[in-house]
Image 1 (cartoon, rainbow, N blue to C red):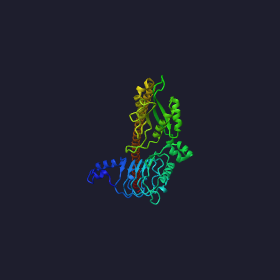
Image 2: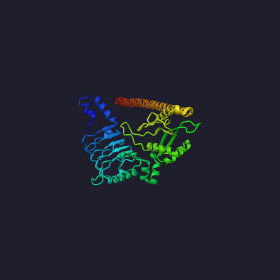
Image 3: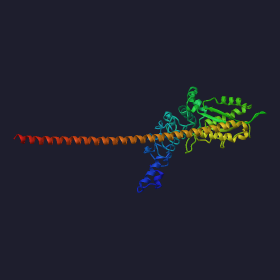
Image 4: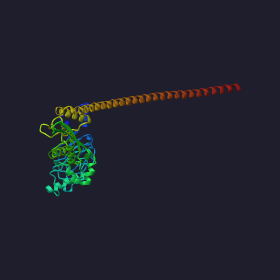
Length: 402
């Protein structure tokens, strides 16, 4: 495999070891690996790139999917425009969200849907043959679509077409859909902020919050919302609410290289032309962003602040509460950071104390060994001196006897 950093001459055999270290660090930090249009016949030698999240292998000469065992962090995998014959070697990629297998030689009539990663969000199987190389008909593609959605209901988009809630329910059946609805994707909460325009004298325009999930009966949710907010034109408002809720649920995963995700919050409008909120401005959720709790609170505050002229004094309580929650969140984050810092300092101090104790113990053992050696030497000298005295006394006694 050839990498851009090697082609550009960034590191050559004559470079210093420091330059080689820089290249090694760059490769280890790599998140997106582009190996497309290189006429590769097999996937190999990628064991060192287990941190990679995006792998692009399109437009090569690959005939099989293998040797991806170490790439468990993959989120995007592009294998389109190859000669791959079957789906395999992917089931262990639990983090994979986008898989492009278009323009290959996979016989869709015998597609093993269980070999697909379980939590896929986007899958493309277009322009693959049916059985025996024949082109798949629309009816056969519909059959494949139903089988895939039934096996992988978390999909947001299949073959370039969003997977709707109604389609998911039809593919899973009542019992299967109810089981899916109890899972993570089914229980995922979405929020719409709706500008309600006053209809009667004495009423005020205001922003209403609509919470829902994919598992809910959206028509019932919309009807209840209209009843609670006192919307008279229920027949006109319900389709608008249903459209916005379905659009948010069925929004496909962002394809950008910067990451995957889906915006779950938006500021929408309902009731009148001039009262509608901006669905594409700062108050809305940009498609594909993943927001932290603090960022969500900030965006909520911005959306409410932008509607201040419309809402009047009634917004002040909500706005103040949001700001207070932001301050509490920052304080909690700072407290957590201080706790982690203190823990690290304690760990370092503990390690130093342990190291000092080990050094002291080693010194004590050395002193004990020295004392023991001196004692042994003293005993040996005393023994040798005593033997010599006894020998001399024996000699003197013999002379005296003679």
